[in-house]
Image (cartoon, rainbow, N blue to C red):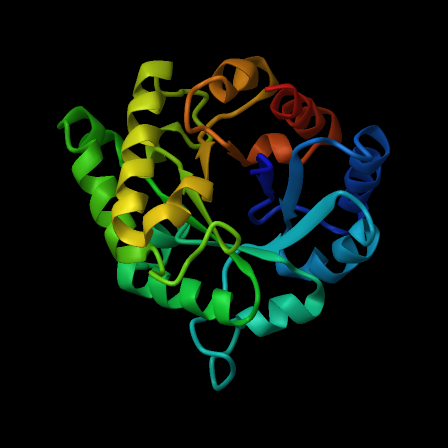
Length: 247
């Protein structure tokens, strides 16, 4: 499988930010890993235009489970594909907490993404309280069971583990903790979708930066990263891409 360096711009970026994409492509025209950036919807078409024919894939940050209808402010998976997206992030902890998204809703969105020809990047992760209570594996196991589309394959599904307490805090789990979770997730995927699970990329996310990327990417079953703030700058994201390409 090709490892994946994915960047989530969240609610950041304007037209002037596209200069970072140009710089990234100039510095990393043909990395051995796959690159993905997920900008806000306002930049999706423009970024897809810049990335056309390059090693960079473009994705959305969310989609509605229905294909069309009276859903003001929402975007369907087909619309994302039409705008140039190949991927979509679903079930990010900020969507789960800010918008009350349930596992069942995340699965419905993932099924819609697959039906539209998009690769679904399904996010799961525990809170600090759940980690401290020793509930990490129970929590993420339940999330995987409820959120993963059972029709997902190695080609259409990516799983991203993002401990909520590590996102944007500068804190990361120990390498042993990351290894435990990723091995658990691989086994859980096998129980759900069988042999296809061995080809599904499992990303680590949560304060990934150039200074810790090399050691994280050496952990078994870590097939890349879902990066937040560090993906906004070509130099920072490029360093993470380089670390993954060398892993």
